[in-house]
Amino acid sequence: MRNYLQRFQQEAFQLKNKMNLFIAKFQIGKNGITTGVINSLALALKNHRQVRVSMLKSSGRDRNSVHETAEQIKEKLQVKIEYKIIGFTIIIKKLANSRKHK
Image (cartoon, rainbow, N blue to C red; front, side, top):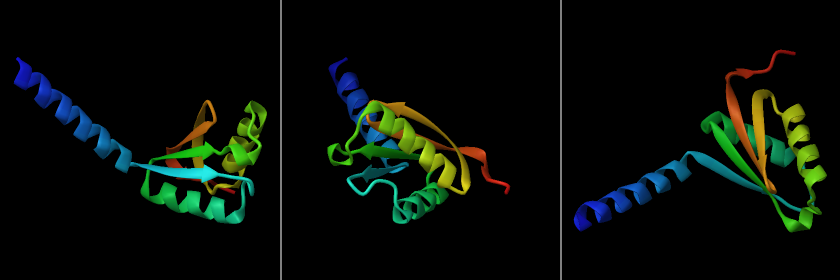
């Protein structure tokens, strides 16, 4: 039983590490949303389905600014996304029909 439990924990740890490879991670600091950030996010969304954006303390973060930043990202990206805010982290998911029609 003990070997089974150790093997299960080891497999769970390996799976968790593999899942982190599928999530791109970004940090937004004092410069906020720039064209470089938008370009990097667009490139990451081409290769990944999910992107995690962390708001650093230097960005002057508060709850309202996190929501405003998420909306700015959604407006400026050329792909259809949905986002979820957890604390000071924005989880961005690319939708199936990823191209926006203008």
